[in-house]
Length: 383
Image (tube, rainbow, N blue to C red):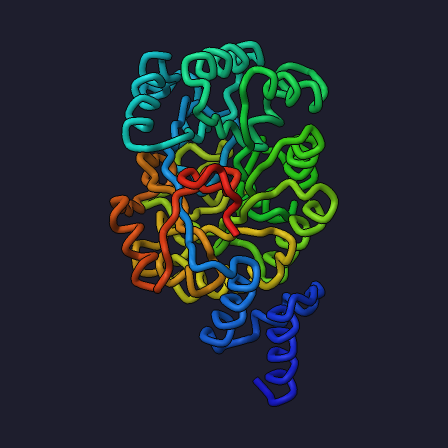
């Protein structure tokens, strides 16, 4: 890296630290920075400017995968099953009640309800599910479904997207998770998935949800077939939508967790055939790649207020380090997680470990809800 490039990178770091917006070219250039400490220092400066108080947050919730049946094929997913598979399931109401009761007993205030793109469940089934849970647990947030699932509802029911979201909101859907984002570039999405919404469709689900007054998170899964400029393209699409709607509360990124063996069958021909990608052969992206990408995301996403650490994929120590590389939130206690675990990555932390990770960096741990309001201080905003 020559002196001129060094100066340009430092200029970009200073620019973002001061609150100036980075251009697309600026973002791409930051991946030429080999000084991880410099990236972290700049990202931490942005975080401290956005969150000047000595609080760092966490929440308590549970991932409930209400079904593992999915008509889509994602080369990285070891969790999904096709209809008729011996281990395909749709959870009973009683099982859902039990999981939510356990979550509340542990101090949780929401469940992330996600499944696959089920090929036959109709919109009325989801409305009944939401109404039932909301009537039984009126103060419990249902962080429900994902953009690919919502788009699947649209296709199956042949209804306008806005009507689908209006009906789900009326039934009790409280917020929209950012799952299924992967990389928001169609070249990448078409290389690693089939029968799943593309970039504009994913963004449109969030756009309309925001227009209806809803809030959502956004995500990025990287370290597979995308290029570095495509990571910035992904961030840029999120930033553009946030400029328009201001509906994203937080951004979460993580590295591909390659399945131990290729999911099978894939795309009718197995992993690596007919356009499929054998993700089990992709070397896992390490902690350096995770930390630098999160730091660059914090520098680039100047209009998204919160960044979550992904200790679920990275483990305790790197998850804690993420709080020095742009994150202001340790994410969830994650009482239950199935999708990442299906790929063979299993990290579990206790609530005290999460709090201690925050305390060791000199911050005060505070519990918050999905809207980033403290749950222990009259719903005050986390600033």
